Image (cartoon, rainbow, N blue to C red; front, side):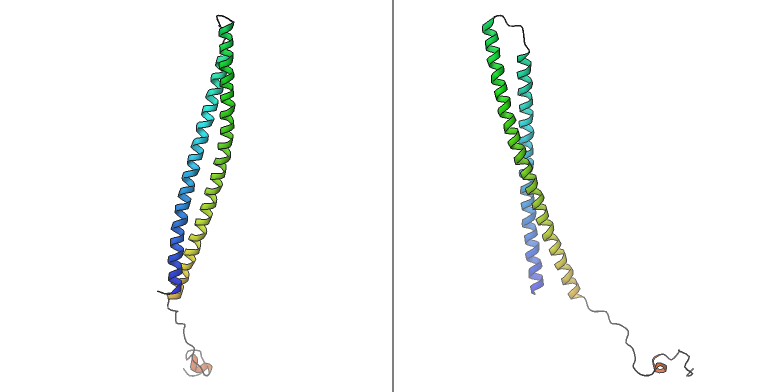
Length: 151
């Protein structure tokens, strides 16, 4: 096996490795996006629940009002914590998307190099086309039908 073929095999193997790395990056990006979506949803539901309880006015006494106030305060704290978690998840998801794009660029670069190597091997394996040979000598010998008087 010649060096060009060995190089092609190595490039194809590397391309497969890069494809696996891209799949892994895609999976991680999808998981990060899923986590982000869940945190945003949780934050929104918690915020809505806190707003709902805060708008209630039918308390029997001051103790009930105090209890609802503390509950709403706790829900708002949870909502703020969840919002912070969602912001961190957004940063992580963005980073994972960048890693996915980089993995695809690396895979595509190797694929391009392997394709070029295949073309080089195919071109080297082609037999050169034979061109028409010119005869040497005078013009009348080279082309008998040229109208030089030898008709």
